[in-house]
Image 1 (cartoon, rainbow, N blue to C red):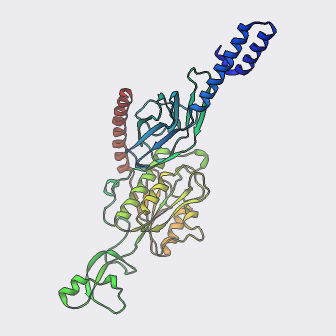
Image 2 (tube, helix red, strand yellow; image 1 turned 90 degrees about the vertical axis):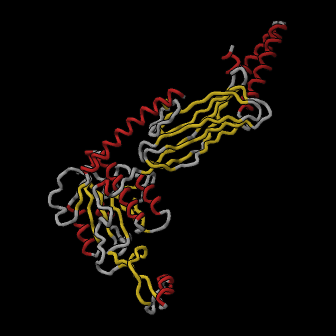
Image 3 (cartoon, one colour; image 1 turned 180 degrees about the vertical axis):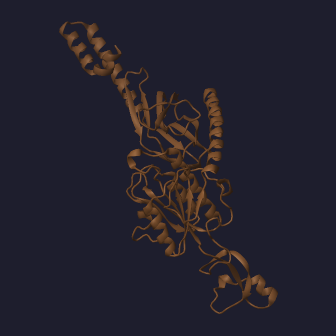
Length: 422
């Protein structure tokens, strides 16, 4: 009877009425009218079931570091004056971000489904809290969602896709430079008392008498009041005010060999840590990597700067790093029209060192750039990088990665208990 009413109710009702008239059977005519009326009311109820029903997804924060959580609230609102007898909601969540609620396979790679079924009274609103745990860096999408409802008897249903999607950026984990085995103070060649190519305006080492031509922002008014003579601040000389982090995404000598996921993640973490340390030291920071942004052909390149959101831009770019390269790092460093800032320190984070990359770094040194290499792999490099300053951080990273693995295991156990309780 459900199939009869749900699929061909109109044809069935007309057929019953015609058959009843032909056979002079009022019972069949009445049954046909009943089927027509019930089916019509059910069809109208199904059509109106999702009218003025709104689904929203709110997230106070859409950015997090690895190990942090994202709180999300799912809300269904019925703005009609009559109830919705039943409604089913399905939303898509990133599989890489475990939730504290039960999920189901979605059939789409990288996504799982959260499903809720309920009824809504007139002008009622229902909310479900969901917490996502950021286990890996990346750019993740939440949604789209699908709403399904129908008539009171379940004969007809209606589906609506809520195409509004939310994005979540998970920044890579960062460590302090001492944790990486690097000295905390100027680890990449900024020498106090070096050549007065640049002065760092955030490192004041004293005052001197005012010299015509000094800008007013250089005048130290407190010292002027004490001495009775106009005094100008004296800044510590620095070989470089800009730190450009250059990440070599390549982890295998040949592309057909694939990539090493552990070494790749290590490189991203180290690059993020160096950028963060440089930014906190009030240096201008930039980023160059031989990859591309998701769904875009443009290479990953963030111009050096000191804007308040500069570190956020660099970390977001690093969060989107994929194992696929667009060119060699040497090509990206010497790309025409994208010259590095004069006197910038170039910190190369690399698992492999090719002859071409080494040659590019020597050319950068000849142009006045300070160059430092941070080696993230245990592999032998040969003589390609001979003469260039290299810091090996693989031993320190093994300790940090082991501690992170233990913390993740403990977190998985706690999260699993939370899901069972929920």
